Image (cartoon, rainbow, N blue to C red; front, top):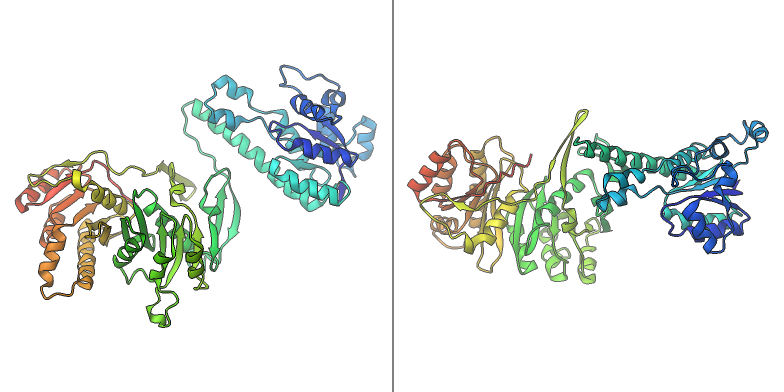
Length: 535
């Protein structure tokens, strides 16, 4: 372990620097410092050596030149074993620690600074020192993160001013990531100024998963550096390790409920919400979401957009003596849980219970990785650009806008070609009644959505005239499509089932033919102006 005898402190963010410097001084370490940092330290009563005494040159050009010099970089870079004799001849005294966080380029950019201010906040000497000391990590400690100060102080105190090789190695990795991120931001900002769209990404963590999408594939989970509210940081309150597929489905589940105005629950299987509901009573909403496809709900991912209470999760029947009546789910996600709800969920030892607020998942960009390339697009965060009834048969949009918005929001999460059927129940809950997803043509999706809706209606009906019940219920439903109808066949299938209202974006060259068929059949059709493909 190398003892820290001489440290160079030059920081933009001064938080915690006095405490670190005091620790170093108490361990008989000489402090070398620059400009603003030196002023803060000396005001705290800490004696420092001014950088110019080491470089032999004054700070110049309004601070643009301070630390770059043969003396400083040599003191950081020379190999303490191989180069000791040469360093002595040159009069180079080693520096054993560099504490440096760079000019606040990201902060001034975020604040809307002009170009001249951006340029002045490009650090040159700082990255040079950081990279030099990091390269020579065997002998020099490089601290770039104020969050590391406490651990460094603790280790220095416990080991008489020394830091272990492992600590210096870890600091070295952080240092190179720090300068890489810094340079990447500057590069993309300059491209932005030039009107060029460029993208540099940095992910860390590399948490190994049990396996990937299938058992023969390896899987890893990374966090984007600098990301706030990352899904990587979700809090796992209970249950076994998350899998690759679990995490993928968790994202889909929270995306399905994140923008719902009322209490909402999504039941997701293989990235598609097989059940969705929204209303005022969480327990009722959960039951209606589950009823959207009780069979597919087995082994599903459940997401709530509101804190969860005991009454809600008791619907899962987890502690029923008859195990056949227990509802098996893989993951439950919610912003918060009452203590009673959490205790109840823990009854199932393997059930993953995740604390994460879906509203935090709102994204700006949607990115897909391809072979040697990526696709980037704006995230699909809008529901519609208009709400225009284009048929002779009208639909009361104003008084049904909440049902329409629920339908579009639910449909938007279903894989294309996407068709869903939604309704408003007597208790005021909005429910996804049927869904057709991921089919090569829209007709099949429409047929699947109608079949699933009929299956659910059959399960809830106890009378003798099932066909009449279908017609009555479908008359109060709306069918929502993610894209335009290229032909009237979907209208005909919907009408045959009893559906009288269709929501779609419009925009087909066959719109006139489709509208004409709606008029012939007495079907209301509303154009929203926005397509919602999700591949």
